[in-house]
Length: 94
Image (cartoon, rainbow, N blue to C red):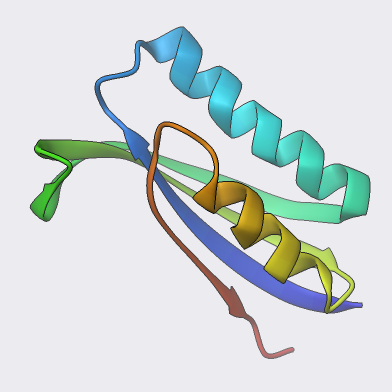
């Protein structure tokens, strides 16, 4: 088991309920394949540059522990999910 941190930027065009459901979907996916250590919701922030004509995004940082093969699967699911603007998953040194 290894520690990871993933930052997820979702579309600010989604209403609050849809945004919460989208992040909840990823939380449950992570819990099914590991354990969540912490969730830090940064809220709506201005993007450094427009992405898909959007200038704001909702930021969420999740720290979790899982098998080394899981982050690749998580990022694959991020890529095919509507409403996800950007993501980054990194390994955290213990």
